[in-house]
Image (cartoon, rainbow over all chains, first blue to last red; front, side, top):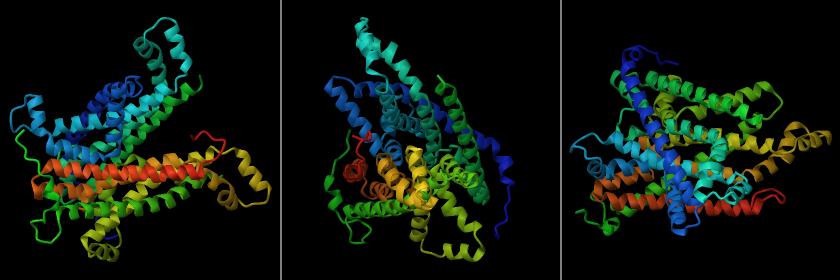
Length: 227
Length: 245
């Protein structure tokens, strides 16, 4: 191997890389929060007896699950910025890349979360809903007080695993040159001519973070299985 | 909105003067996406099956090797892995090999990196499905096969794997769809697949909405075709008495 490794660009660029990591986490957390809320709404619409709601939810979920994340991000980076500026009342020329990334990820992940939540709801025995309505709860109350809490318990490992996947997918904001963790590492590597070391460093950091998080998810599952 | 819709832009000849219409560009991108995805899927199936089997064999050492393979490939983002294969591997190989790779035509380098990266990335996920399929079979199958005098490789080849593959067709379908979607990431290294051609169309035709709607429809078309084919396969190889309806 004739390549000489030179890791000297890493210590000096750590603040910049940490800023990038913070951007990645911001996008992940926003997409997570919105994804849970909008995903639950979509899941309930998908299971609703009202046909138009069901069609809308099914169409939305199938559309976002059939299209690559790169296309969704490109849609939001290239076509929506003006729309976003007017909706959020931003001054013209503001950098909407972070906002459009958050919106794109949130809408995209909601479709995946909706499917996980729907599977969780459908894994609750039917007798629970029957008993709840027999006790006089409305369908909405039955969902909120009886079905969803039980569904959540089954869903949590899958939701967390999807969150880890989401964190990895935030690296795709590279296509808009937004400085997330991977983008920052690439820029430092490009500037210093030390792309090899920076990419290996970025890969190692992602590996450590995601591996630790997935072990955490597995540890969370074990006590529940003993019930 | 003062946007002018113009769907006939697809039948226009491109201003680059290569004699192709913009629709031809999009179809070239579609062809590249399908080529890269199918090649990577083949690689992923072969490697994933081997690694999945390795995770279930009695040898602890082999199990750990396979587990490491899966953990490394699943915990590093696809984009990072792609850049490693495209930028870093030629640097880290012995100088002669590295130079030989760098002298290949750029699109060959991009296709090679894309196919290897996608294939390996998906092989980790396929191996998890294969492992789940094998582990869902009753332990009696393995024991009966060994009691009948089959060696362990024969037991896998003749008894376990045929059943396991029939059971995991549904999760393999979603992995197959994922490969087509993940191929879009390869546009970042310059590979002219469908998403990249979409961006080219936006740049050259100044009709972003038509371009992106057309490209999105292409992805939906791929989705429908794959799901139809795999649904047909699933019905053909369904095992009676199991839950798959």
